[in-house]
Amino acid sequence: MATIKDIAKRADVSITTVSRILNHDDSLSVSDETKLRVLVAAEELEYVTLQQRKQKRKVGKRLTFAIVEWYNYSALIEDPYYLYLMTTVEKQLAKENIDTFKFINIDEQFIPSVDTPIDAIIAIGRFTLTQIDKISQFSKYIVFLDSCPDATRFDSILINTELGTKLALEHLYELHHRRIAYIGGKVIGDTGGQGRDMRKSTYIEFTREKGIFDPTLIYEGERLSYNEGFTLASQLLAAAKTPTAIYCANDATATGVLARLAQEKINVPEDISVVGFNDQSSAKYLSPPLTTVHVPMSFIAQNAVDILKNRVNGTYTLPRKLYIPTYLKVRESTKEIRE
Image (cartoon, rainbow, N blue to C red; front, side, top):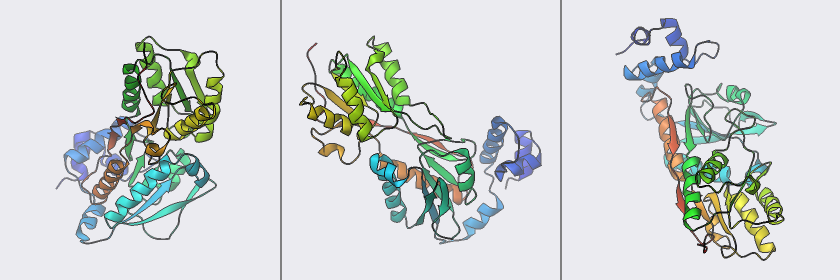
């Protein structure tokens, strides 16, 4: 059985450094490279901590996971993506007979709803460093969904938004659309503050490669929501020349766009094609049914639970960072146009 001394020798660091890294000592000042070197050595040597060995002996112990969500209730209603993701995670936890409760969000302070030991935490969304420090006091095993605040310390599962955007734009391009507008909003970074939206970045890269980039076709609001989609569609329609297609950064935005187009008696897809992102459950019931990038939420939930179970029982010692692939669900909101 490997020891801390074995890890220190392989990673070329002191025994004390190894111990503090494996115990996630936040006061330790070492480079990310050193942390990764120690974690990789620990996994290669199949090192198991005393706590993990004790956990393995607890045959039949029922696990307790907590869910902490980034959005408040009003924001969840405005953009239901995280609400759908949360309910999918809850179903997966129930399926695997894992006790579950939520953190309560009070003025951006996350507090457990019950006073009980927590084996692991599923954090949905993007949190500030202060919030992460608070949450991690309750368990060191945390998997972040839709963000990666610290790849050397926490597990994370991310959506391959770049792939999804390329699939959506390729679809529109193959339908001979050349004036493709982008409607999106500001996004939060992995640790708070303004983040980079890969959907917008990929849109710019794609249209430039195809020689069809037009900065006047980019519309961004304060957030990704129905209301912003409705408002931005109004601005787009007031422009001198309208597009033949619109790529929306999420389904909530696309729903607002569809509503505004319908109000102006603009037919979709005959006049303008529209594509969304997420494939929320209501997308297929819109008028017309929305072509959108499908995000496999059940697969995300399964992987999140699997990662944490393996972290708790000691099978995994090195944090995982997974990129979940997406695919395009073609429905009736897109149509080929004549060149």
